Amino acid sequence: MIKPAILFQNHMILQREKNISIWGESEPGATVAITIQGQTASDIADDSGKWCVTLAPLHTSFSEIVVISAGNEVIEWKDVQVGEVWLAAGQSNMEFFMRYDADFPVEKETCTNHNIRFFDYPEVSYLGQIDEADYGKNFAQWRKAIPEDLKWFSAVGYYFAKEIQVKYDCPVGIIGCNWGGTPACAWMSEEAIREGGGQIYLDEYQKAIANLDLASYNAEFEINPASWKVDPFMDTVSDMLMQGMPFSEIIKTLTGQEIDMSTFDFSAQMPVIGPKIETRPCGLYESMLCQVAPYGIRGFLFYQGESDGDKHPELYETLFPALIRCFRHLWQDELPFLFVQLAPFGQWMQCVGESYVTIRKAQHLVSQTVSGTGMAVISDIGMEWDIHPKKKQPVGYRLALQAMAKVYGEDILCEAPTLTRLEKFDEKLIMHFENTGDGLYLAGNTPDGVEISPNKLGGLRLLTNAGYLNMEEITAKAQGDTVILEGLPIQNISYITAELGCTGWYRVNLYNSAKIPAMPVRISL
Image (cartoon, one colour):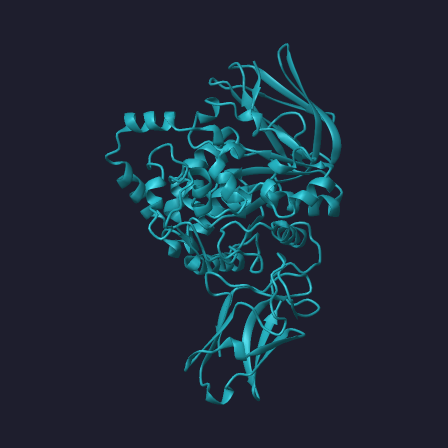
């Protein structure tokens, strides 16, 4: 019996213009043949029944039938398309369903596009778990961008696909492979973790499970409610959190009791660390990422780092490049890797945004030093009291700009305006920027409608020999590729450092002509 991998089914989108692999299981020794676009390729199943057929590059198509056969058994996959496919990986802000997006009600009414499709790989934390529940009811199926299915799409993935589909008039598929609250090491091989300087993650995990009663652990794991694994919208607490309800309000809604958040013990609510927890090193690399590879894709979309701010954020500078190499090695291809810099953030439950300064700095460094990468800056859409910004359209759009410029060869501005130097002139401080396009401008409000004075540079702090200046007394004016600051006591300043977006929470309102907000950066004069 032919059993293809779960990604291969009706309505799928295959990557165009590249060799692609289709794999699965059958009887050992069976010859499995696949036919599409007039070509037929085959493979013989090995002793364990595994086979993998490699097809030569396919041309763009909006409608194909794929025939797969072994002996007398024949399967037809219908309504198959060939176009651009991207893998959307990371944690909750990539997983973030369209259901929770601020623009979902409007988008739902106008979204119908059968050439944008989404496959969400089931959230399984160990090998074999995928066979223990009916994940196919809500996950593991190719959905189209239509009103009844849109809520299941990754919001970032959808908005990215929408831009690419319209621009290049081809089918666009997004494969979701993500899980909220997971650190980078969960998505990496053991070798990659070590290579990235993350031995401490492996050591801490081994220490945590050293005295684990495995029988009790497995028994507890089995009796815990698992409805969220097959239907995430049935997890009442998660559903409320994603909609933006404060945790204290959720507790009050569910129990009728008010709690003091300053004394609430979040650690007591965390699952026991063990061989089935999704946050363990290498876990999701094995149970999810390796199961998607080597599906043909154009590149990776990645939104992650929040959970690395909680623990050893200083390691992200070396861990993140190792993760990129790990992903590329798994696909055996130096694929484009486009990622999102973390948004401004204050505090949410037990998470505090101050460590994000370190993560953002590491992400910026990676975008400058690792080839084939691109970073979308979202310094204007964060939320002070919610780790999940609700407006994902700018995120998908800015990732699409990166793809258009760096992958598809468009001559467009895709980078954030970046402060490069400071200059004192008379009683003014002039801030010089690169990546300005047709010029900078200061917006009077953010994408989510928050008003900011257009004569102030949001997110800016100025540190001098006399300490931090009072920004209320300082005005800003955008002019060409500069921002001119007035109202500073220049005559009393011998040293000055501009810190733009260098705190956990801030709100930037400086944009270039591509409507990309300023990069978080720190520069001294």
